[in-house]
Length: 66
Image (cartoon, rainbow, N blue to C red; front, side):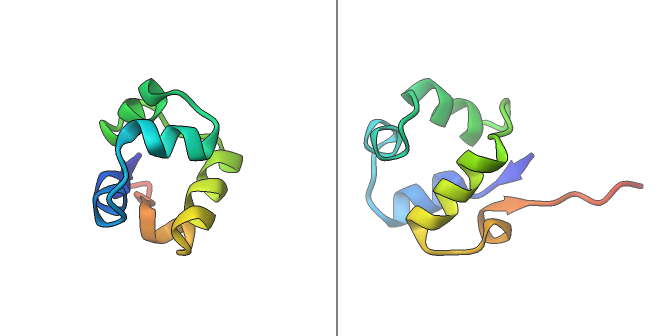
């Protein structure tokens, strides 16, 4: 899934480790999400959007089926 997590993290001046700690996940999970190799659970996506104070759709981009 395409996402803007790296951008939001940079704007808020958070390292991958700091973001991982705030979300209760590993740094490797953050790396995998940012590199679009792992789609977060819905619960984690909500935690991320709540942390940054934006709707999920601002961070995670929905690709329509063809």
